[in-house]
Length: 233
Ligand SMILES: [Zn+2]
Image (cartoon, rainbow, N blue to C red):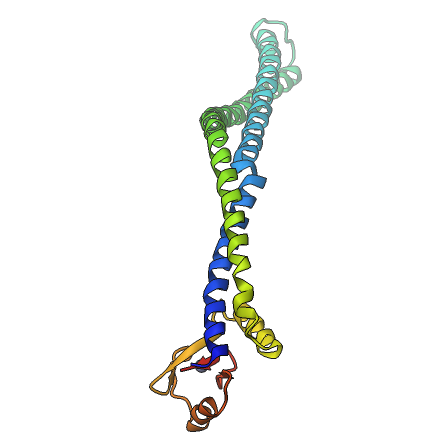
């Protein structure tokens, strides 16, 4: 294996480590930025509280409507059976109004029961989520400290690895370096692969004899036919 290939493989291993550490670092940063989901949970709790209050208000409004209609209904009932109606037309009209109010009360009652069910459901969800929030808030104080420590440790670790990078990059010509960076990015961290018994270990296909000869005749890694990675023996 030539010196450039050795440097490329060393660089690739190091860049893989760096990339993993960077991802871990970013993941922790995101969790910290989002406050461990506590503020989202708070919003959800507030939303449930508002929904519960809204449904409760609807129930109250419907209950007051029912009370009004029932008092109107008993007035009509008194009229119907109190002997004050003297003609058929008035009787029919009062009966019609009475029936209409009765239907109306039934309809509002039905809606009120649905709204009451909703109040129970949202109240229960609100209580459960509030409990979860309390627990999460306490946990988050501890988690946050640990994550901050981990983040700072990862950052230092990343930087110390980064210092080792030049020992490889110093040995790689600019043109190969540019290709390496491009291939590392586009192929999930695989920019150079070995050739084993004439088979490219990246593509798992047998290389044409021309490629094998090209490998032997140069002192730097050549690109695989696929164009996805450098080859080395
Ligand atoms: Zn290949």
